[in-house]
Image (cartoon, rainbow, N blue to C red; front, side, top):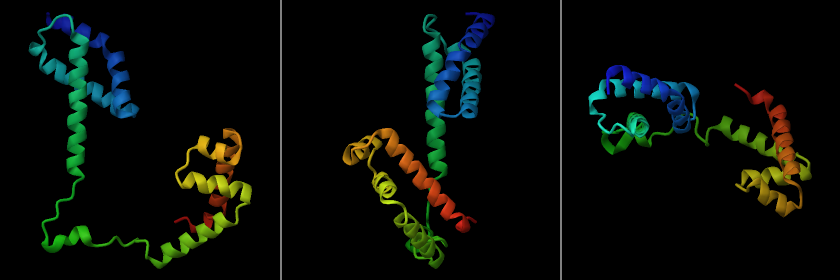
Length: 168
C-alpha cells in the first residue's frame, strides 16, 4: 500500500474511530485526542501494517491499546507511595474529616432538613439514598416511576434551597 493510499484509508476511517474513541472515553475532547494519537501512531508504524484487508481492525487495536496504556498511566500517577516510617502520610487524617465540628453541624442540619420533608417525599428520597432503584421504590410504595422521580427531584430541590446558607 502506498503512502497516499494509506493516508486516504486512514482519513476515511476517522468518523468510525471518533465514535469508538467516544465510547471508550465518554468525553468528546478526550475522544478527539485519542483519535489524533491513533492517527499519529498509525502513520509512524505504517510499515507494520501487512494484512491488506483488515485496516479498520488494525486501527481499532491501536486505539484500544493507546486507551489502555493511558488508563494504566493515570492509575499509576494517582497511586500514593508512602515510604515514611509507620506509613505516616497514608494514616494522617484530612483537615475536613467527619469529626470536624463544622461538618458535624452541617450533617445535623441536613438530617433536620430531610426529617422536615413531607412524609410522601421523604420516604422515596430515603429509599433512593439507601440504594434502591426507581422501579423498586415505585413497587414498594405503589407509585409510578415518574411520581417517584419527581418526588426525589423536589426533595433535593427543597433541601438545596434550605441548605443555601451552608455553601462555601
